[in-house]
Length: 310
Image (cartoon, rainbow, N blue to C red; front, top):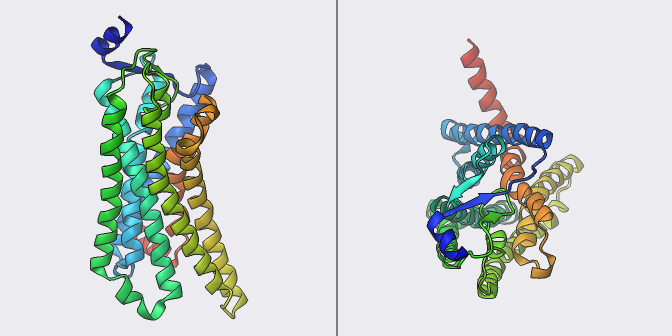
């Protein structure tokens, strides 16, 4: 009977981050600020790359892809959080839930791969400078970007249908702030182990492979940094590598925690906190860490601001 009711209603209810009124107000303000920072930072980066011919390089081609991913990734989740925080009705339709999960999975996996591609690009530029133009040419850039997007959307096209074939008989209330696989598995009255195995295999193939590939690239980069004679040059290179690795580790680490932890380690509150890091915080930090410290980017912004002011 409950199964038929769930099917006829065709809606889920997202419980969100908190039911405490003042905490909801704080969450709304924080998420709104972070979302606006994400949009403005990533849009600004895309515009700067388009108008500055010096930035028409493979590195900024991949960074532009990352910015597009982050804009779409945040936009698939944060607006719904903001609406649900203010609204008493926290329901989401079955189709809306499936679409949110689809784009979250697709863009999340695409970002994993594009981060590994960016690390490879930096490895080629620093460790193979004489062959860089041959290794990372225009065709290779398009190929690597296409593989990243293809893997991401291919991954989502497998898991979303598998998840929504499950009978959600236990409840319609999703103990999360968006539609994600692990909380939805908890609502099914069917054994979800096959889904969890498929999820773990995909995470190992995409996330772990991308993480280790990124790590190996940075190990080679850092070993080359040691060869720099200038102490100032070494410090600058280490600072850049450290900031990149911090953001990359936070992104990969939180996804690995979410999708590769054992079933017994499931904790709704911890999972919500971890999800905030990779869905909201990382997309905001990426343009700052990867590009806003770049001299050419800062100069382009200053020139355009000066022209606007005059």
